Image 1 (tube, rainbow, N blue to C red):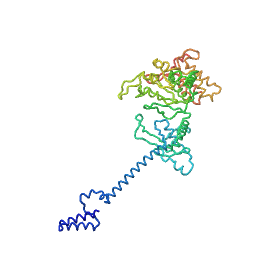
Image 2: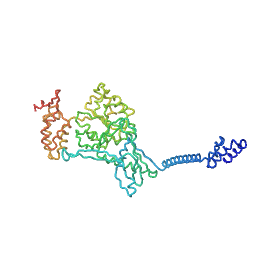
Image 3: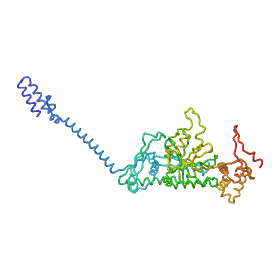
Image 4: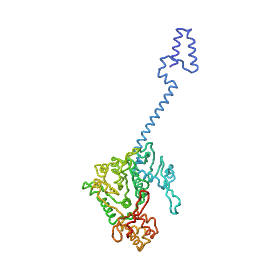
Length: 503
């Protein structure tokens, strides 16, 4: 068509001016000879037929169409894959702040027997991280070797494990953000499996919990406040046997009976609209076994211990109230030295610290206020009960007060049997030891019944026995060291022997 239009145009021009347009016609014919288009008039440039007949333009339209079709197909595939994923897959995300996070990591670290060559290769974990713990081996003496335990767990990245008939995709990620209180980066573990195998998660969490309980079996977890959260304070401690804490007759039994009664009567409290919480105050001189008894009681009940330091820098009324409402489950709350939190406050130091920030009213409200938590067993300890405000130890905040005092003859005898019972089978050594303590007046009076105004503590007796682990006679001979010592201003130490000179 273009050729015909050009020829017609040239013919008309030749008729009008033959001599002038000969050269132009020849030039157009040269274009035709070489298979090229002749220059077009402005009207023909915008012709759609001309554009589509142009191979460069047609090729560009084709490529653009193919690109658009590919992008549309890709977008459609992404949407379709997302829809299929939502319909066929199920995800479970566990953050590092969740108590189950270390349980899942420990569960993933367990060795699993896989059947089949392909399955065993497909479920291998290639990225691992390690946690190392060291312990001193004293079996071979003071210079014994150090034992190291290496705990391997899945590292960051993607893994595949098999649980039963279900394949579980595991993705462990570390985020760029961090916990503002502890500075630890946020981490998550995401588990993915087919919707048809979603019930496998129940079995996984049950196994992980059982594994964690087995790892902490025979141990007591001690928690401390870290920011606005509770975190384990170091490794779990081995449970202390309740029988290893020797208290005076009837003291230990009365507390254990009361706690067990409280734990068995939750519905009784609920039916009567009474807040389900219990408070105990243990008071007495230092070294009498108050904290040791609480730790042993936690082990007896299979509870943990949650400790709060009221004098901690940054501890406020709101923070204390929040922490007491978020206590870890099955834990005893321990507030040690409650009297020291509100006395002897220092003046503002150069670093801006001005002593405890918890007010007395804040402590009262946290223990027994409108926002106070329930399902709680709280223990307060003090060496000076006379310094405590009556409002703090009233019923409802403190339901039971017991004095754990100086060592009695009963406690000294029980401790002797616990340390030397296997060697002193006839009890002769125990009687000589008790008689020696009476001679020294360490039970508050001498053997003749006169007052001595002397006492010793169970901690001091235990220290004496630890110094003479296998030497019964040595413990008896060194009993004089149990006499309370007076520390002089010039650094000297003197024993209270003046009263013993008359006996």
